Amino acid sequence: MAIEKIIVLEDDAILRTNLEQQLRNRRYDVAAAETIAQAQDYLSRDNFDLILLDIHLPDGDGTDLLKAIQQRAQKPLVVMVTGFASVESAVDCMKNGAFDYLIKPFSAEQLTLALKRAEEFTQLVRVSRLLSRDSDESGQELLGRSQVMENVRELIRKIAQTNATVLIQGESGTGKELVARAIYRASARANAPFIKVNCAAIPENLIESEFFGHERGAFTGALNKREGRFELAHGGTILLDEVSEISSTVQAKLLRVLQERELERVGGNRTIKVDVRVIATTNRRLEEGVARKEFREDLFFRLNVLPVHVPPLRERAEDVPFLVAEFTRRLSRKHGIRVDGLSDEAMRMLQAHSWPGNVRELQNVIERGVILCGSQGTLTPEHLGLPQATRLAHDFPVSSPMEHVRAAKLDQEAFYTMADMEKRHILAALERCKGNRTHAASLLQISIRTLRNKLHEYDACATTPPAQTAPTVYSEGLSG
Image 1: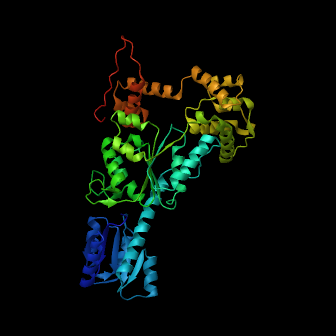
Image 2: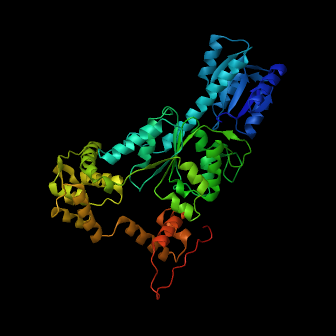
Image 3: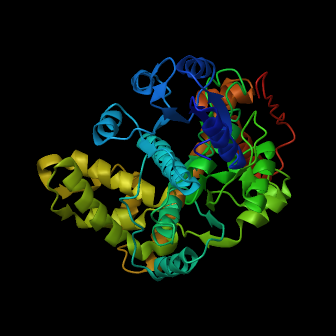
């Protein structure tokens, strides 16, 4: 609800009471005032979203208060109200920051229209502020010409025609967010907000406020009311990126939103209805999280209405040459470096690599190669920075998916996978922090939830340790 708190500043007692009642019937919080001094007192004690401001008042001119409001850090929208209308007066009010202008007597329909315009404008401003902070990958599209990618595109076209909840699963770097944006752009909500929440990047103690918003004074530092991401996405689509990272408490509240399409802000008791389409992504198998009691089964079923699997790059090796050519062209233009192409050996290395980081890793490798290539014009293996084992591809020219698998297998046997390196890095950090997870998470610059989930994965895959090896003891620390 973009507009909640309204001041009615009107010296006519009958009209003031009538407006107050109309607004309360529409479930607004209303503060009624008959003088500028009373309105200023309200503004000094709380933040308001809108003021219905009469021009002629007992203690001054409403336009003076209008000008003063524009100097406030938190300024409400102002709808001027007058029974003595003139073109000059209306133009003057608009120049000084008025949002709208009503002439007395006005009908209930005219008031409703003014409120609707204010609601839509307020949400647009708040969404725009949010999007200016968030990274936007809307200029990118899902690339690939393989049959598996055509199957994904066909599924996107079918899913986009509905409002059902979507769960997108796939490894890191496969393009899950691009799939989500493609669904949004092809849907009937394409002109409404698309709001992204990175669940893994938000501290656990703030994620509930980020999702659902908070009221003023709800906690230390909550100086003003704030709308959550679900409210900002009203009428549009919300993307819950890495949904597996949210705590059990937030999972329960998210379930309610999915079931009832309503929520309450932190510290509030107002029930807020929201109309949003939910798309969630995860690089984990949520079924395994359910089995470990880390993820609610009922929430999983609510999210998994329309499942989408994004294939890893190793399952669509025939896309690699196309992706290499496309990334080389785009990144050459981005950095202003002319690249004529790749040497045969460089292409064989790229086709032989197993790509544990998927399309994102390939894009990063090409960007590094373009930058290091400079004025040489042709990308060579030295520019790519891939493990030397991929030079085995020189002995096994890749011309088919099966030969790609053969070369990739040699690559994996000769070197640790990215997952192995990640595991070693995490365990080394824990050893350095003497098993304290909170300190290790801080050192690794990841959330404690992400660290906990990684350790669960390692425990699930671990074999029985040798008898002489003492088990490692982990502690959460004081803040875990």
